[in-house]
Length: 169
Image (cartoon, rainbow, N blue to C red):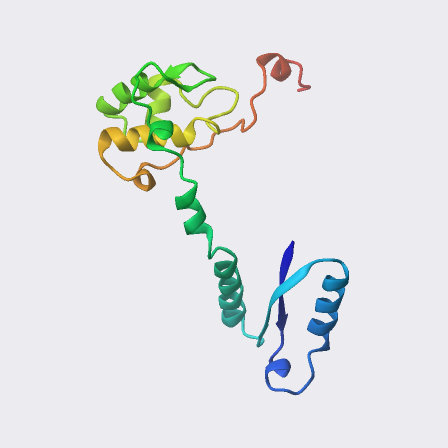
């Protein structure tokens, strides 16, 4: 594990006090076996604090784009060529059914749900969602980012009608 340390205080930047806190925190992290790779100081200005936190997050995500490209699922996984392949296991909706719904005018996962029940099973689209979006994007010739995701609806966790019936009024 590694940690970044951010200290806040204009007096630290102006040299009015010595930042012994960062030194102590770095020492305690090292004694605990945790690497501190990055330490930052920022003044008492909300905009600068936010910008510094974003900088730290960008630093953490620096390799993300590379890793996403290196380990991207093959297009045949996201958009199977065979129409018989099941895309939504919960509702047993095939890739072909999703393609037909998209060709009939479904522009995103929520419309596909209305046409096919895809995403209405116990997983609520958490498993099939990325595949459904990729299939729609492929059929419509649009980027996946434009297709969108499921619109969550209550109940967020599936419950049985019996459980609802047994609830006290």
